[in-house]
Structure formats: C-alpha cells, structure tokens
Length: 254
Image (cartoon, rainbow, N blue to C red; front, top):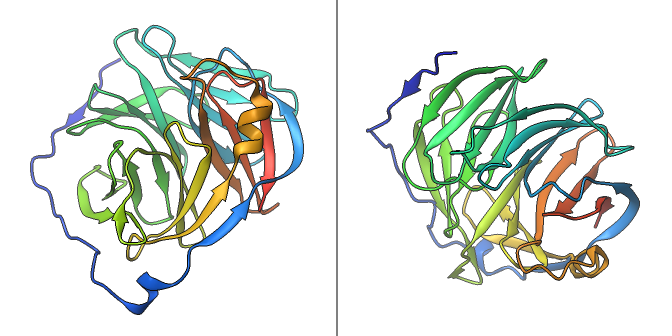
C-alpha cells in the first residue's frame, strides 16, 4: 500500500501564556476512585488509549512489538490487531470521525487508519518526537515529552498553535498520553503516579490527580512499566486508565 506523506514546513505558532487572575487560583487536589477493575493484556506496552462506542482502541510501543489494537474492555480480548513495521515505535492515539491517528516516537509519522477495519490509509509527517495525542472535536493536541502541547489541524497535521503547560507558574515536563475532555486536556506525566488537568486556553494546570494506588496495585517492579494510557467515556462519564505491561485496566472517576 502506498503511504502519502504530507511535509509540513510552515508552522503557525502562538503562545497562550498571558498572565491572568485565573493563573493564581489554587490547584485542586483529586484522588482516583476505582469503579471497576478490568483485565488488560500484560504484554501490551500501552502508549495510547481511545474509547469509542463500547470499544477500546489501544496503541502499544516498543520496536518490533508495536501495534494498533481493538479491545473488548470487559474481557481484555484483542478483537483486531494491526502490527507496525519493526522500524516504528507506536505512541499516542486518538479518533477523528471514522479514522484513528497513531503517533510514532522518533519516526516523525502520524499513521491514519480506517476505524472499521484498521486499514492504513495515509500518513502525516512531523518534526521531533511524538508522545500523546487527543482530539477536542475541532483540533488535535499533541505532546512530545516537553512542557509544550501542540495544537494541530486534523486534516493535514499542520501546527496551529503551541501551549506552554505550567503548574504554579513553572513548566511541567514529560507530558505524555492525553485525553481531551470537556474543554480541558488531561495528561499522564511520564514515570509519575499523577495525572494533571490542563486548561487548554492558557496552559495552566488546574488540578492534580493522585493515581498512586493504581501504580501500587499494578505490582510492577520494572521502572518502565509506568502509568500510561487515559481515555474518557462521555456517556458514562468515566475514565479508563492503565499502564505499560499492567494486568489491569481501571474504570475510574475522581
């Protein structure tokens, strides 16, 4: 299959970092509340999650073992799977209409699949690393392991703006998997047991969510088997969380 690459050399960049009174509001402290524990394939090096119509779509990483999966959340069964070429390391994942978009870590390609059969349709090219990805209904938001999020056009992946993410005025590094929910962006922070809720208008972290109980329950001694993977079921108003090589998927709220 031919893959079309769209080379994007023009970046429309703005910064949403104008101080305001809202930037000084207290950061809310929340704790994960587990509603249900569900089975999860412990061989999956989870990099991205997406919920849609009762099904989980999952991106897994590692060279030679990366994949895109369609998963039954009740049983953990992999209903369909597309393996990536061994040269690609799968990363963040999101849905735009009837398509799924999967990032790659250092390969600079966003792979676009048909939602119905996971067939590869095209690819967009980007610079730098790809970590997390979510869609807010109008634009894509992408992380690259830094303290910045990149707002991108879902039709051609062109950068529309960038957002500096701060906590109490200080940049927060290693933003990883993302979920766009009700005007906010939720993010895993790599190798930490917390998530954060980001105001997408100014980049301010408005809430920190303690997920240390899930990390402890995962029972992982591997330092790479960290909390990663977040998505939201709008109808049930619950989140799904897991981690790399974790044996459980957690349905949670806070």
